[in-house]
Amino acid sequence: MTARLTQALIVAVIAGGVVVAGAAEKQPFAVADLYRLVGVDEPAIAPDGSAIVYKLTHSDLPAMKRTANLWRIAPDGSGARALTTADASDASPAFSADGRTLAFISTRSGEPQVWFMPTDGGEARKVTSWPGGVGSFQLSPDGTKVAFTADVWTTCGGDAECNRKTDEARDGSKLKAHLADRLLFRHWNEWRDGRRTHIMVQDLESNVVRDLTPGDFDSPVFSVGGGTDYAFSPDGKELVFASNRDRDEASSTNADLWAIAVDAPAEALKTPRRLTDNPAWDGGPAFSPDGRLATSSWDGYLRLYSRDFRLLAKKQDQGGSRPFQVSFSPAGRVVAGVGLHLGDTRDDAVDAQQLVQQLRRHHRGVTLSERRG
Image (cartoon, rainbow, N blue to C red):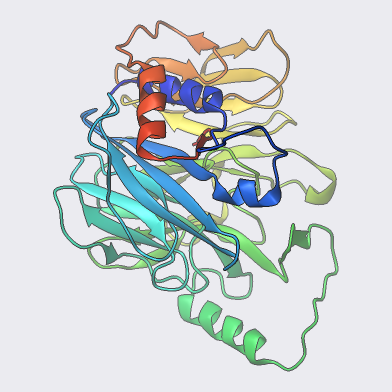
């Protein structure tokens, strides 16, 4: 499947709107109506273009509960069927490079962890067991590793047992208080309490987990929506990630891209290579099949780097300063989600409207939303 299909899906979900099934007459839209809507998002396209897997979300207002399962559908909208039926949240589907494995995040074991499921049928198995769960993940191109984000105590870093014991000690303490001596101590309803988001890499054969972004920094930076802000190089040997390492991060909206070798020794992990230095947010790293790197920025520029991270091209969005959703077509052409592109993007497309109609036929009361990642 091509990058144009990805764009078509984004167009489809943006244009999808909301359908409330069975409405006999017009009436005010109430809170109960909102919970009756069925959410369809997070489409993942199989490497051979034969299928799309997406997340389907149902809400139960009386029970104050929300469940999400994964469904599979053909690009023409036919053959929709459920892949998971757990009474939990199954989300963030992603295919392995060979298309034989579907990875996703599930809460079926309690905490959100990465699970693998064979695409030709079979039971899902849990892959990660990080204390507190994982936030996002990326599969290495060669299928030997999985990178995931997790909140760690700065005193523990990548020591899973230390993190587990610290969590248990705080949960079991009779003293329920939050101590903060600097800003950025809370995200929405989540207290940070000295924790940082780090990127872990787990070897799928040995299950050994390494913290690739040690230190008192969030890597990647906190963001609402958007992609994962980290990516493997095509050969799986390096990882590029976004992080704000300014001295006073609370007064800065900056984020730069950094690169680190996946097998780098522990001491080298403390000094990753800085790729960008403009004072605006840089993120959304995406690699081409041949190793080139595209990034987006709040300064309104899309940048293209060579395999050794030299700047090759830089193009500004004429519509104003805003980040792009960057991806590559299988042919290696850069595609920006707002319509800006470097090079030709003439790839095969699908009938987006037909796909929307088929999704609505399969799932009554469906509302579609954009996946930014």
